[in-house]
Image 1: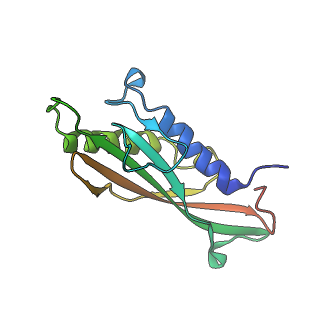
Image 2: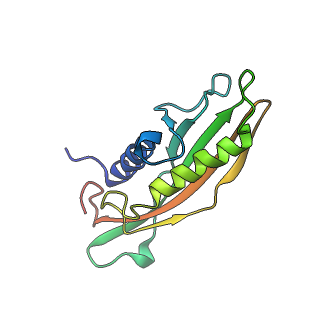
Amino acid sequence: MNPLIANLIVEDVVKTLKGVRQSGGFSSTLDVKDEPVDQQRITDGATYVSASDPEPVPDRAPLQHDEYDMVVEIEVYATQSGAVTSPSVHDRARTYAADAYKALRRDYTRGGYAWHCEFGQPQPIDVGGAITGRRITLIVSFRTARDDPFSQ
């Protein structure tokens, strides 16, 4: 059975973020997690991707297709540990978000599965204490064959 187009889009986002490495021309390295980030055990550079269920957009769908919008959220975290004071935890969180944003903007089609991807500005996540983060929201528009979410 073919995977759902929506799942392929999320997999592309995760794969893209896993490619954010200092050795790959970025300012930082992201630690992409497969599970939601436990705020008690957040590590520096921890990154988590979540997605809403796709919402049908029938007025935009071309003939013989269904169209959907799906919200994908990326959360990146920075922690302050020990005597490390430079750059600040807030500066690192902004750097992590900027690197994620830079990587994601390289392909608006999310691996060829989407026809449009709208990027929101990174927003602060207030965790408190020595932890801070940024949330990037994407609205991904994609199409599937009519009544078949497994194919385009």
